[in-house]
Image 1: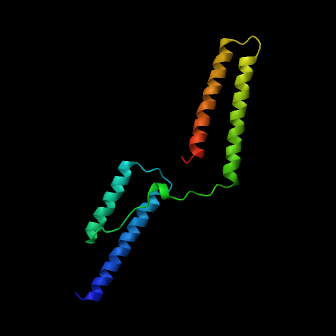
Image 2 (image 1 turned 180 degrees about the horizontal axis):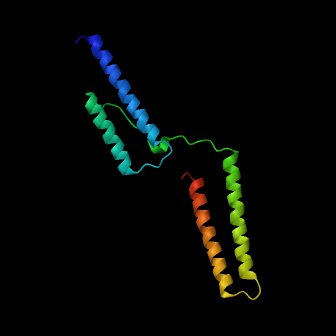
Image 3 (image 1 turned 30 degrees about the vertical axis):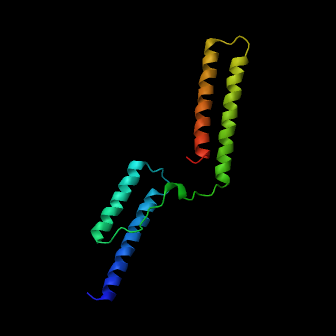
Length: 132
């Protein structure tokens, strides 16, 4: 095997490896990756590189932290505003149940359920706004 064909062969193998890396990165994009999934992806790439007969070298997967998030547009902010209004309504209704004259136990239970819903929605909204 001459030097030129060896270089071409290595070039083709590197192209296949880069294609595999892009495939793995595309599969990971937009997902929260656990340690186990990350390890499985690395093993998959290592086995693929070994199958092609190339040294692993500096082949790396994109880390989840370096992933660029999608720009937030007007739909994102309008949905966020609607969720905020829903939460405001929940709090107002819960307060009205507690402050009504002659409130019964059922009224207090309803207020507690509404405040529970408020707490859950607030947690989900906070988690979503701060990067999933």
